[in-house]
Image (cartoon, rainbow over all chains, first blue to last red; front, top):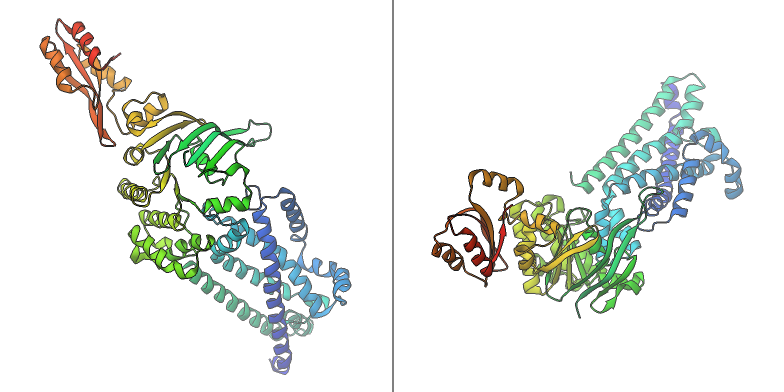
Length: 219
Length: 340
């Protein structure tokens, strides 16, 4: 227990690192996922921008990268990340692989949520003379907003999960702290203190997501 | 020139399964819709009537033939040009298709934004429409807070927002109970009479057609099998499909099962006499029977009213010595059919 107090400043630093990594993953990965997921949905057969080739390509890319276990993706992408960002380890590299993995995971969640919008509603907007892209931005996405919030909340929890193991590629965060100072130094107090903070972060995110969805869905 | 002209229009979808036959949803329809009229398009599910509606606003491109709306041939237009045409054609749906993320107000504002109507004019237009459909107090409600009938009223207000000349109603009352259906039918009649909007009513409900349409076309397997004024189609349906539809609301001709039951109870000669307003009065017909001392009994039938005109079929049992002679005399006055 004394050790936890002794490591206080490290805990603060690790908490901030985790929050920043999660924030970058949810926003940047979320945005990319929104683009890819919307692309998957609208290029489907009978979709607003139906295009078999694009749809097939998107599906292949998503299906190739999404099933790769995150830890393997993180180490596997290292050469590429080093090429593009100049550094293959640390928080920046961790942020890049989290964004990469989150984008593909979120793409499927977005696609599934968009399927729940009744096609008739899109048809109604088209019948009023709205262009296809206008329908996407002013009808499709707003109509799916409630389920999308819940989907992103789910993704948020998964991204917190990712931040716990990027210590492997030299990043910081609560996961790294728990492993380095807790597990490896046989101090469960440190481990569980880090876990507790993670639980609080997840609870806050889940609460915010539920509240947001409830407001949008009005129930 | 008619407001909407379809010339040999066909719509074929690719086969559902590999190696299957292509689906001919609409198969060579030629049709005019005149300005200011209400046209009923009737048919069973899969007859192609909903596809036909989507060819009129070009939500579906035709496979063959031409569609002309207000003198503009849609089949030659680009998507951008079609979008402008669609702003002049309102559409309402069976499932209402309201935007659940927007209030009633937001739903009606949407087509105004699409049509580029300045925001400063929205207030007046939306409030006018809400009063027209009787929902002035619901402006800030969300669709899920409304009943089915109210939702369709919002649908109608939204469809009319950009002041279209044409309204396509695709099974617009099929999800509503009979009473609400009547309210919506009355509202659509006002849309036609007060705003001069031409309406194409796609439906399988003959009650709606009977109360609303000026003219009817009946579809089966993608083709038009019968068309005419609503009165003529109801009073004298010629195609089998039309007869089945008409019988759902006008049941004045006995079915085969009923005929057998009638035969059992009525040994005399059974004939069905068709009355149409403006032809021969019942007094004259029954006078012919009475003058020959032929006994007669009404065993089946009814008198209906469509578009303010009456018609009907009466099945009578004739008894006595001079029945043959009486039937010959009746045949000179009205259409007489032996019941077999």
